[in-house]
Amino acid sequence: MRRLMEVVRAKRVDLTPLFTHRFPLKDIRDAYELFNQRKDGVLKVAIRP
Image (cartoon, rainbow, N blue to C red; front, top):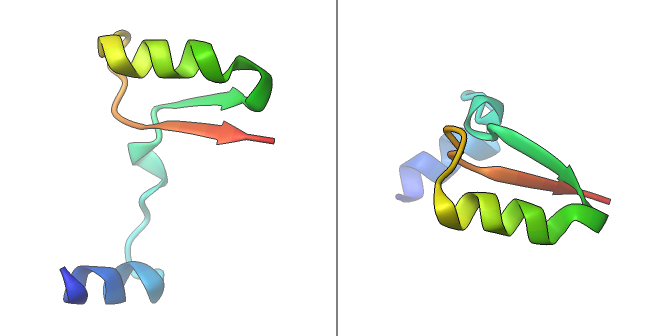
């Protein structure tokens, strides 16, 4: 795990493809519902301000 975190910190791997859905903060309930129900191929939800 330590080695993986070093790779991520060094930005040697792009994790953005893991964020399959993005929601504004005002829609956080919808984001959590989607994630909890594993709908629409969701892997990871990003919430933006």
